[in-house]
Length: 329
Image (cartoon, rainbow, N blue to C red; front, side, top):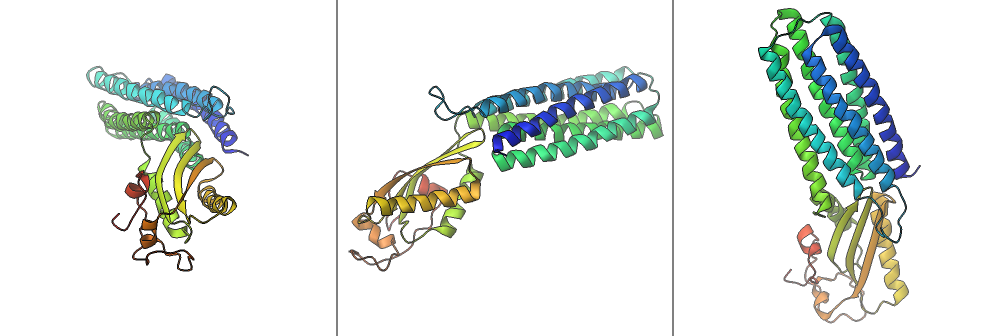
């Protein structure tokens, strides 16, 4: 199964689970008359809406490339994540408003024990679904799926706060406890929403993914060969589940086209081995220059002009530069 198909399958499950849990929370509110549970149910509406938005974005991003979208449709996932993050922020604000209102306007609560059991069950299911979403999203580089998973997990924290408030209310009879706990976890939701929006804006603006670059640089340093004399002008752009990477690879200048291409293939295979088939790699080969001798440890080189002095360790800074490396790099 392709990563896009897997993402769609998981997101469909998320939508179904979100609808089912929303109905359970509405039922729990009806039998308990708890404003705190109603607040949790209202937050679940965001889950349902966000689930459909995420499903649509994954469906669009899975479309093949065409003449109008030569890099594919993956950018839609960033828009989906932005919408979902905004909905999470709004939900957090609404929860705080309802919780504060509930402090000043008390409502008689009934069958609180049944409400606790039902809401606790939804929290467990939500958290498991969230973990699956995040792990699948990270595996397939899907921001939309990661956003859905974080949303589900943040909803779990809110629900846990509601359950804690209901338990304290059950044993103490103090009516404002559930509202106070709901406010605390609403703040967590707002922070989560902000982070999702921040990551989606970074994707739309093609901001460099430093975590991914650090992983890639470590992999390249551990597996570089003597024929990979230099690597520079490396850039990464994420289009949903597809990772586009381009760079300049310096190889011995006397290599013919086939030999240079073999080194490019080796680099491509290394990247795909570690990051999956969703990586598109575009490599431009450069021939080494006389100043490359000092940083080249290809000792059997038949045309070496200067002795080897030191090996340049690749870093995010120096491989992102458009300048070839030399002994002073």
